[in-house]
Length: 349
Image 1 (cartoon, helix red, strand yellow):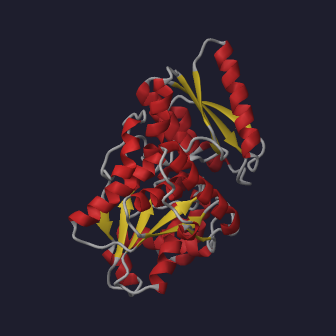
Image 2: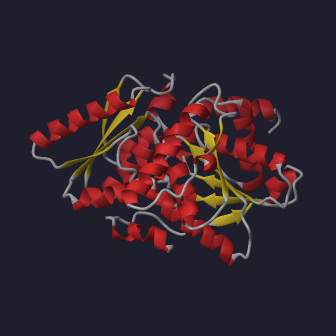
Image 3: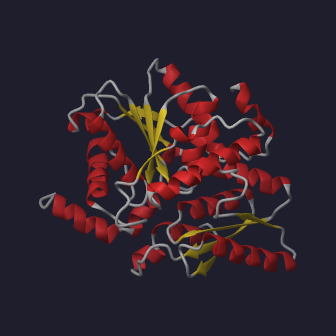
């Protein structure tokens, strides 16, 4: 580990995932795009723990702190089909802790499959207690309500630990991807292969900011392109810049990320968070038919759409890595929309 990242070793951490996750070439997708090569996927959908995903890496540091504080209950808030919430419930079950999940109304969908299938079904199977919050754009309010629930649990003799949603808190989750940067660089070195760019979802900023910070701390100039999945690029930029500064403060080292390093693309965001669009559908279709990769409409479908766009803007000598952050269960919550859209693409298929 780079000396700059030595402080990671002193922080509480609970190992939850299967690492290193595979790094694979995508030759059939590259051929479909007329590119010939230079496309790779980092399979963080294979981190294990109840369908895996990027949140497993992030939760290792949250649960490390929770256990070091003697917590027996963990609380988190997220969208109805939150991968983070499902992964938290899974980690809590693995560690013998209680879990309370507050689901916020972030997507205007009322159909039964969205509210009962996918991650919601898994939350229940994993034993989580579910709560609701009516506003999907009030991060501070959602956190306040979560702390109220935590206070109620504490009065009952529980020892709660809250994983916050809003910015301004210790970026413990981002540390999972500070560390993942080392894993990715090491894998490409083992292949004697160069990587020029990594394309990643940019939502909370933990994965995007953590990966960018980790690469720069390792002395790597690899471009990191964040595909906006929650908010427009102008608003997201400030979040990522702040997240990198918070990581530096937490590790008590100099900030290694320049503002110019923060590259964002919101071309695939419309019509909004958790909403399908044509480019995302095309990416989901190509991923499945070319590489047997299952993507969701909320995160990974949009990120691969951005990866495909970058592939069209660069030549085959520009090696691009698509970070597959998981989210597979959410696919089933969108089954009606996906079935209709895919049938239109492939009337005979």
